[in-house]
Amino acid sequence: MSKELEDFIDTSIVESAKKDYHPTAFIGMRENLGTVPAIVKLVTQGDIQSGFRSLEKLGMIDWTIEAAVLKFPKDFPNREVQAAAAWRIDQAKGKKS
Picture 1 (cartoon, rainbow, N blue to C red):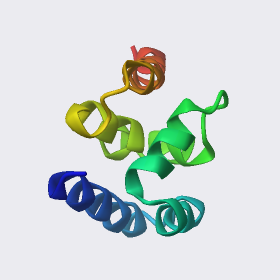
Picture 2 (picture 1 turned 30 degrees about the vertical axis):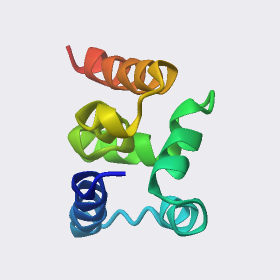
Picture 3 (picture 1 turned 180 degrees about the horizontal axis):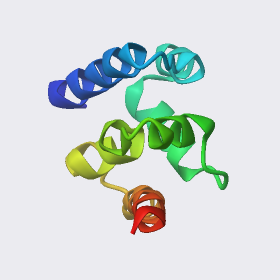
Picture 4 (picture 1 turned 45 degrees about the vertical axis):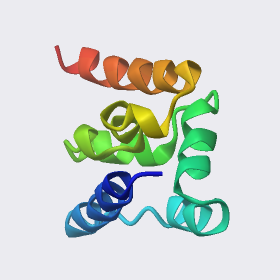
């Protein structure tokens, strides 16, 4: 896993907190599973996660874990994970068009 991914996630959490959103469930999963496995688990679940929806409402799509998957594809070589992340972001951005 890249340091850049870790830094991106750390910054995402800080930026979210500035807008009074605290992704406590993700933080716990990250501590228990590791960053990449936690992201993969959440991104590949059928339901769009509440954290994604919260960040979407705050105008922070570019700070979601889905955005991290697309920004750091070498950390997520599984094309299904990349496709799931891209689909969620496309859906969110499509709503605003």
